[in-house]
Image 1: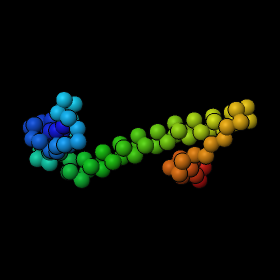
Image 2: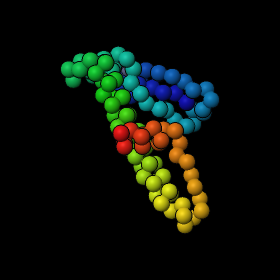
Image 3: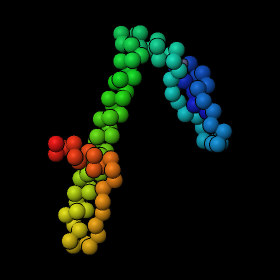
Length: 99
Ligand SMILES: [Zn+2]
């Protein structure tokens, strides 16, 4: 399976562990990323920071959902007899939420 630049079709990576029948995955090469950044008046650093901010936001949302599920499980524990401990990332997120 190959990963190609969605803009210029340059091959970015080949994953020999996956078959070609799985199709191709898409990414963006450095050259195309630089052109798009220049066209939008931002630097590569700013683009990467925007992507990281987006990922962090998605992670926060997922942790919030898992945290909510954990709260539900804790609330149901007396009825179900099932107790669970949240995973470390959820504990850290919950700690940050109450701080
Ligand atoms: Zn490209």
